[in-house]
Length: 520
Image 1 (tube, rainbow, N blue to C red):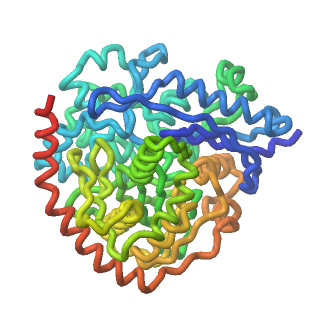
Image 2 (image 1 turned 30 degrees about the horizontal axis):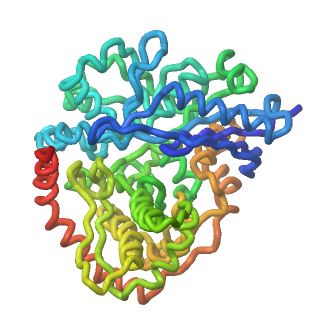
Image 3 (image 1 turned 180 degrees about the vertical axis):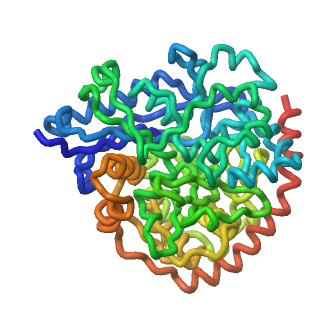
């Protein structure tokens, strides 16, 4: 039987998915397993590495129940996953502790000190990415300085997708996107000794794996992994780029000849512009944001990333659920989310301003501050629950505009993906906030599609990524939704107040954090 299926694995923070596509990009089947993580103290967040691999293998095995003769039809497997964090193994390939996630903020104080060091300007010139507590560099520095026993026996440090690639192939590797924005030089797409030295990690240089570009290189599925996943040993396996790069690719950020922004509104919020050449990369004076290599020669995605996006919606819905449960009424999250539009219809014309910094890890875009926290401003006795819901949705859009403004002129069109892209209200609000046409895709699994696209080009199914985009992305784009002129005017005025109040609150956050630390 001819091989005609590409599998894309997307190991996210809350869900691990394996998705089967045909050669032209049509989604055939998807299997998913919920992912969980645990808190360590006030700022630590970790995930069990062995369970993450077992759950990934489970999704691959389940695909065989949905796709006939899957084992003999797979052309390749490509893997992406949640970015940042620190996943460590020993010389035998066994996990050393649990994987630190991007939500972990234990390195916040170290980042604050390093950002004030004069050498950070040179580091930023190499990586074109701001330092944040979620990154592997500061996390390793925290372990080295604060808990060196955590590093005992470590032979290799990974990110989530690198760990899964190792379990699939036995190869210790990292892709160019995460290697470069954490430890490298964006122009050369290699590690930078200058960056590693600035981070104080010279003694750990040997634990960084080789950089492997999945757009040109692959390894094969091992015998052990094949037995566990129900697939054929020797099947090509591609190490995809970090999940946000793959999701942006699958959502349509790369379309030569256009200037389109791309926002991923999921647990975190990613707002991206494309840099077509290294010379197009913009280095902002605040030294914030990320610059990620794309799986296309010389092309980069520049992004500003909110630490928390739909996590803010989860919070306001949890408040609603708690209130209803107290009255003996049980509603599921989907039911509450469906009701959000009706709550917002009851909002007044001027709801409070909400700063959506709900994460315990603070904020990383368009500014970096691990102490940043969410706030509501302008509450009055006339405001009801609908105003609070509207304020949260507005806050996500304010934060998106704050991020895009850091990268230059606002885009005239934004391609939107992520779980919140399904919300009609959020699309309407975001369009007005940015003054942009909002376009979504019929494709449900953009991240898995993006990593599968890398495999399709790497193995020669397409001559270039541009050719692949024409079949895998363009046909799935919906007609854009134009911005509401009245909302544009309303949010232009509101954004000035949002940003002014955000700047005014910055001295308050560290004081609040100190006060909370002193409270028994």
